[in-house]
Figure 1 (cartoon, rainbow, N blue to C red):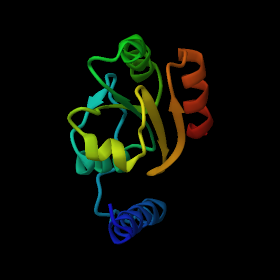
Figure 2: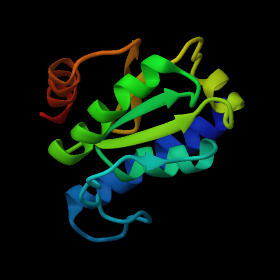
Figure 3: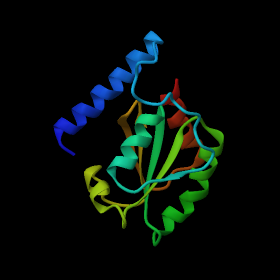
Length: 141
């Protein structure tokens, strides 16, 4: 993704937030939606960007079907989707190699937490529910 594309996304997000603060409804994006109770599977950078811009806090799980630790993490991600105000996103690295490279994913599972449209944290390896919930809560406040 080029710097121009990133700046365009940032400007769009700024405009949306300013519109929300003014309360005039002039923003171009949908209002922040309630987070889904199950993980969202995305393919490609545009789907990921749309999802990240739609929700305040998003935890993206880069995984592979053949990865044992990824399978161990899956129930935790599903439980987080049900019990937190963050959106959970799953990205298959085998189907989205360019996207994984863009975020410098070198191994799976890797999770990236987005807050207000920007990457805020990167976690490599399996983490427990409480650790991930605490990380999410820290960015929801």
